[in-house]
Length: 138
Image (cartoon, rainbow, N blue to C red; front, side):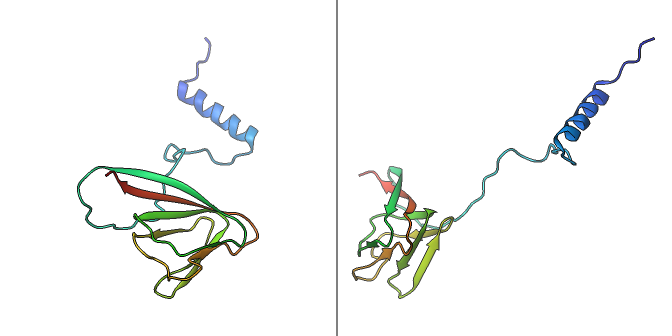
């Protein structure tokens, strides 16, 4: 009579051989997921007038040591520093530097003092900022 192994025994044996061959000491469990989503920032933008909107994503590239002059934002927007660093002068007198992986929010209006520099790239490398805005369709 020939000995037959159950499918579970075969699967467990195959997994053990794969782990030995790859040098892993523990198998990946069924609970581990192949991806995950982490909220990196969330801002309450309050009530909005009814209507149609579009989401706009822009990448702003700032050259080394470049300055961004005073400007007024038209829309709410989340910012994410992709590369480099960005130093921002806020209208309340604060001065903050954000590095790659950092996020910040800018609402509509004048967020910066009325000077020759609202923000700057303080580094010797290019800075890239991803800007995501909710824009009303007029």
